[in-house]
Length: 85
Image 1 (cartoon, rainbow, N blue to C red):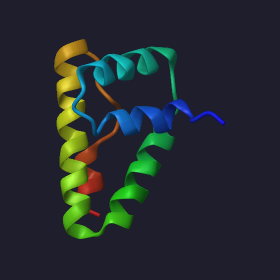
Image 2 (image 1 turned 90 degrees about the horizontal axis):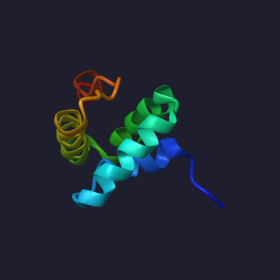
Image 3 (image 1 turned 90 degrees about the vertical axis):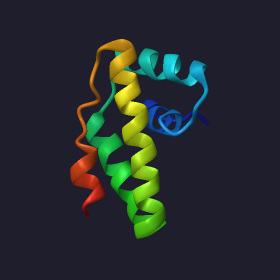
Image 4 (image 1 turned 180 degrees about the vertical axis):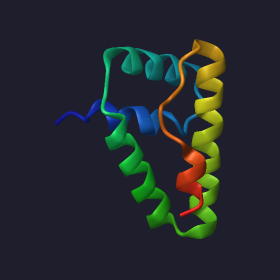
């Protein structure tokens, strides 16, 4: 079985390995459905509960900020609106 690029992108958004950031960029360039990424992120945050959900969201936001700084492309998902739910 294989994972969808959206799932791999989100998973790599919580790791700290340099290679994962490069993998995220390759997946990003290949195209993916960011609506699915956003929905999965919302679901995971919700399932983790308030405290862990905030921490998870903070990690993802930080990685996406670093992703933007490194590659100059922005993930089209507003994590601020997800955190508040």
